[in-house]
Length: 346
Length: 217
Image 1: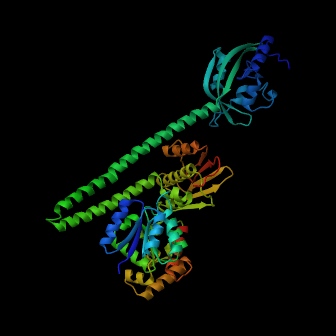
Image 2 (image 1 turned 60 degrees about the vertical axis):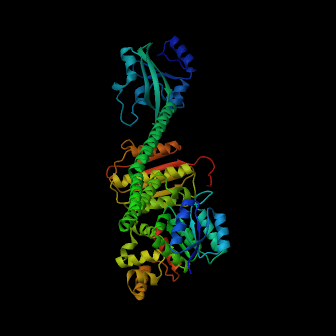
């Protein structure tokens, strides 16, 4: 055991005792230097040896960057207050910087402690990454459920305003035609012709609606034929490049299809792109889908609910979405969707 | 002699309505079937001119119709085949046309309510021709492409290409467009050269070449 003259003897004993508990713990002296930390703290912060941290200014080592990468001025640090004012602080969510400069989500309590050279503080903290992930997962599930509810309402409205109205009109025309049949057969024939035309329109409308809910081609022929049809019907040129990826599990094909469809719609509607390139490839983990457009760029997952929905869909499969969209474009959206378990042939 | 047909669709309502429509138009519906095995039996028993087959039938409601069609083609090559589909799926048409050389057609189901179009298709198939739904052809022709090889075609050549893709013979194209047979041949020569489609004489091979060309650009 190295003697630490900064710590009073009773404090050292106390800290050694808490070193064994699960919570991570460290102590800073009046000048903000780390003078003690337990193995749990080392582990969470990603260091192998306490000497990499002992004696260094704590804030400048593990707290100097915010999660967005901007500097975190020491003067604004809540962990300064116990030393300055003697108060105790609790924070449910903050971020420490690990040795490899990645961030780790933590909750902490910090209290003042009297050391030989003045008032220092002791910080007990906890890695809350799992809890955060869980919270994000719950939020994502809620959004997916909400999106499904919205979609159902939209379908109901489309059915009611579209096909149903047309069927009602046809039914009335047929009834009129029946009444006119004996007295005015020419009028009846014209009405029948109109009813026939309306009905064909209603059928086309129903087909568009059914295709929007789930393209039959996707389940019958698979992802690539469905994407080629999507490309053919798009308002701008859409290229589909794929190696032979075979049939994939239903969830993967459906999610990949909707990601490609939404990204293509965004490229046309928001980015005013002139062309879109969809690329599919098998990776060691699963499927990688890339959608590139030559539009205006500047898209963000937080910017529109559409992209958030794609993110949630990928997330629900244990996959993720990466969006690179500088102002001025191009926009590149990559979805990595893992294939878990044995591949099933349907 | 009237055309003799076998009808296969698992939706009894549509099957019966179609049978009534056809019979009123002077076509003889000799048997109806609600699934693939009974369709094959009905074709064997009746040896019709054409079998009209819904692509989606039980048990999986995916491509039973295509499989049954190819089985019938293998067993009774003289029987014409018209596949009906609810959805415009290019790959279904390609699968059908790749497997069999003539006397085949692919129409969207709602085309069937246009009786003239349906009778025309049945006649062409029974005479050995090939029929592809014009809406599929329009979709293929209308698709936007980054480098559109169709730019090189004149409007007249596009019309000829569309009719060719639908399975019209040179004589048929000449009639529809009111041009001479020689003019049609000249247009087709130009189209094949401009699009680098291998020139084939067989009408069916021509359809397949055109679809494949349009689909893969």
